[in-house]
Every structure is written in structure tokens, then in C-alpha cells.
Amino acid sequence: MEQFIKEAIGLGSPQIQPESEAQSELEPQPTVTIYDFGRLLTENEPDKKQK
Figure 1 (cartoon, one colour):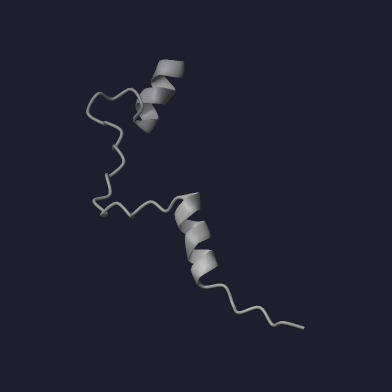
Figure 2 (cartoon, helix red, strand yellow):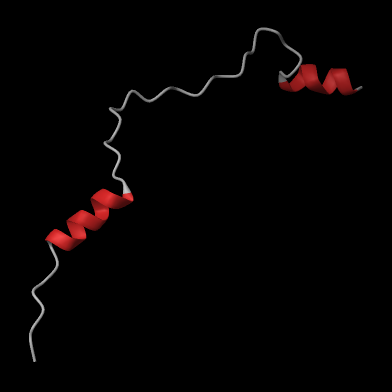
């Protein structure tokens, strides 16, 4: 009975192959390290007002 159900919905058929996920061909983005991020924050820090 189980085999009959699998064949009825197409799971028992060797003609049906699961579709593999498409590999995206996006260009890799540059990696930002915590040191780069800290340097950017320091360079763009607003001026401190002196009291």
C-alpha cells in the first residue's frame, strides 16, 4: 500500500529527480573585520565639545 501511494504521488518514479538548488553567481562581498570597523568608527567620530 505504501509503495502504491508513493508511485501515485510520484515519489517512486525514477524519472523524477529532486531539483538541486541553483548556485548563485554573485560576486563575493569584501569582508570587514572588527579592526576595520573600529578604524572607520574612530575616523568618523564627531568632534567632542570641550566644557
